[in-house]
Image 1: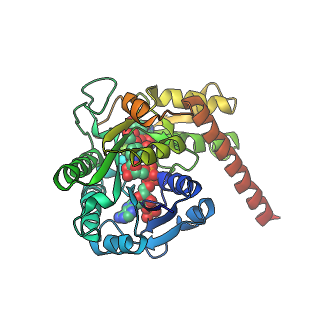
Image 2: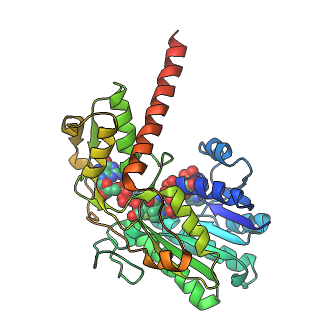
Length: 334
Ligand code: NAP
Ligand code: G4F
């Protein structure tokens, strides 16, 4: 039975990856931070077989301890402060966890394996946010980076550290440069979920408006369930390498609003959307669209869920959640 350790198991990708690896017959360990993490019950619900270990990407001994306990064949480093908008307000913390945390995890593998790093296959969750002010369209593995946020800068540090440990110590370390991927498990702070949840609440008469920032920015949005398969495929190759994972199709935040509001029969959504200058970012990434030809040809990976299907499924899930919430409120009142 292969063994895997996932950092960030309580996040969106961590939960899909845990489910995926359990279904593949892995013994899965998940790193959880904090003494009473409120997201643990959700992990237990979707992947009850996962064994949870305490640890924090700010604390090297805890990472070594987790590796010693899990004895993994594969490590997926997904833990991060992942919300770009917050990274300007907490630049130091973001650098500490999203950037230096990668170095700490690589060091922990080095120590745990007694300098025989090739024994463990290591996946680093890099990001299209590293392309930032893009130098070419679409972006591929050779496109230069120009990050536009403290988050993007921290991810670029983690990316090159991963490459460096591969080149310096023979680590089997891969960096997945993943473009935006979403799902009904996405955090409420990200624009896709903020919109689908807001639309569901407006349809239920609970709210009237969604406050948003820049409606013109464009992203290459895919489905998280498809993207965790690409992470796993990267670690099954003969040689470690870096891969862009994307759909190759870009949409604006306006397109997202069109599809989400249409799903509940609202065509003229402008009266339900307030533009809040406070939500504009100090520096924006205007356009992301990825070229995943390398992942397609070498890994045999391709996305299965298109943008419309993804957003409609998120609206449907949020409508169901809103209905459940309303039912339980009615029960309390009666
Ligand atoms: P997410 O839902 O925000 O999950 C982040 C995870 O990191 C959570 O489990 C969180 O745990 C954990 N974490 C935060 N600080 C930590 C610390 N100090 N020590 C250990 N764990 C810590 O993010 P996601 O969307 O699943 O993304 C997974 C990874 O892929 C992240 O590294 C993200 O930056 C990267 N990425 C995501 C996308 C995307 O579109 N989703 C695209 C490219 C790259 P808590 O429960 O304790 O908060
Ligand atoms: O959903 P977002 O916050 O995602 P963003 O910044 O692209 O980052 C996500 O994808 C990255 C991969 O490229 C990951 F590495 C990262 O961890 C994260 O998962 O914002 C998307 C776009 C931005 O241009 C933002 O300015 O939507 C725009 N937007 C407009 N109004 C908004 C809002 N974003 C958020 N979060 N909230 C708004 O109200």
